[in-house]
Length: 297
Image (tube, rainbow, N blue to C red; front, side, top):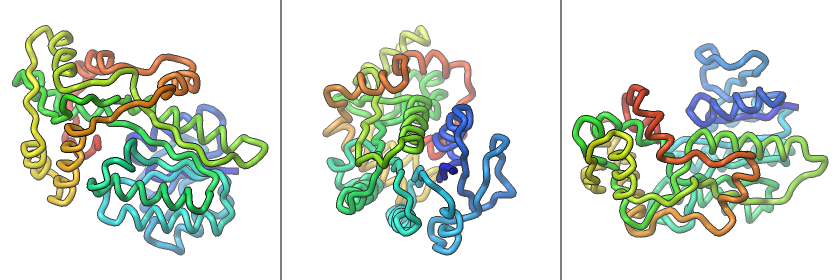
């Protein structure tokens, strides 16, 4: 029976689909415009919108496992709650929800708070799900590569407490592995939570040091939440820019910390080491920068 992947046209979702196909899974994806999307051969495209109840009911027919990933949006919480309610009604008992690390700590950050509300629904209703909580995507920094290289500054306001940055590719592979674990289990598995982190805790200073080493010139950390919000407003709506500002303020005050055993668990699942920021920086220097930071967030 198929695994339905939402958010499948985004960076994470597309990689999850690819991993599932490579591992022999039957996959369906949700799209508002099926005629405009291209996926690997054999992937079924279901037309639907998480705010359109009728289309979601049709998309969930015959599905045994659901990967719920919805992007940062003003109605993110409504989308997720509707989809999970419809999944319960459809009898789907194998779920993976894509949340964010420290959703219960960053309570004033709109998209964190939305995801935590979804987590509470899953827990209160004892839904058989895995809650994936990824840390900050190190790949976001590809969007500021030209600033780093051209101006000698690291502009992301990530602070001095430290972020356990994770590579999107590791996150997507972990998601696919967990989806398959639930899909192929002989019995319904209990609620679980996985914090998806990287191999080290990084500060603005240590990231600047890594770029200095990779580029062979001095890079200085200069970012602030206010300047980050202002830059974000040049290509995104003000509500999203403010959301991101509040997130970076919590980076600075609280950081994003791995718990004991997190990294060992992830390495065990992947069967290999987690990708490092240094490896990412070396790789990204040969890749054109993304046109906007919004696509990476």
